[in-house]
Image (cartoon, rainbow, N blue to C red):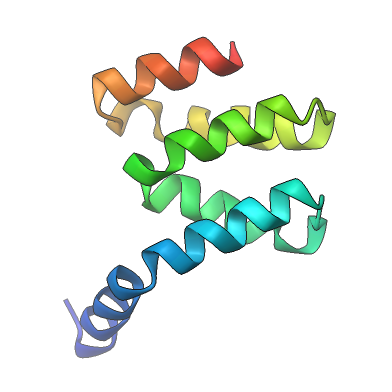
Length: 92
């Protein structure tokens, strides 16, 4: 791991709640410019992302639901089985 990647990982760990809140706000207000941030959060912060999947689905917005399904398709084989079951129940 390069020094730059190590530093980025340390910084990401410190701001996890902030990233989660940012993603919640992006979903709530349909801030499409931030959907890439939401996608990255769901892929890289899987444990904290379970709630966010629910938020994407409850909005009943086709683009948000497609984002949730897309992210799950990318990471489903690497997810914790219990988290995966919860998310699949919400979105499938």
